[in-house]
Length: 185
Image 1 (cartoon, one colour):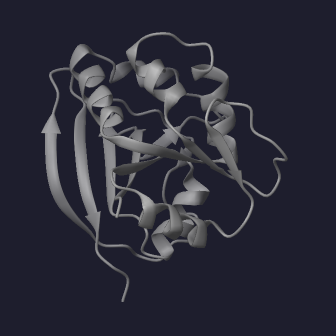
Image 2 (cartoon, rainbow, N blue to C red):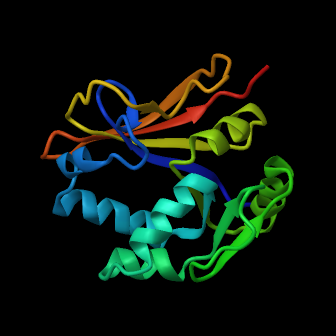
Image 3 (cartoon, helix red, strand yellow):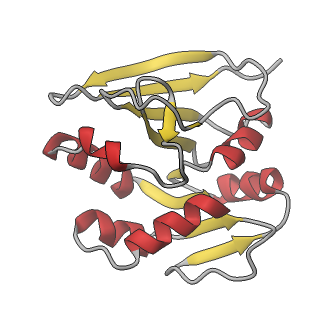
């Protein structure tokens, strides 16, 4: 069975995007050769990527025309897009899923043999945490305070305790944090 990992960059004050959707100009604070190597290592071990509608739209718009080793993986990996509003998806190897995300993700996990990654997708993450389907939360803590925006967590979630698996500081001040959610009782 595959493991489901949430991956995102967040600011020191807890935001994964700024005041507007896709306000990510502060992400440059984490970019480095070391960060690139980490991101590439994750993609090499990935079986598929999972996105909510909004994250899919932004990721597809960027990666479909991007070049480089990370873009190669982003474009070739299978992608599952969870949306009841979209009628089609046009990014390579993308499959639209309009049914219950929890049930679909259970099926995807059961068939997977490698890691599955959710990128961003705060609303999707909420439902997957509530149903105990997330195996790991992986965050790149950016060395910046942005003062406002959208939080990754807190969209109707109850308290979710986490067990720290690893913390890895990078030379540029970014810290990669790996947490295991403790199952809801």
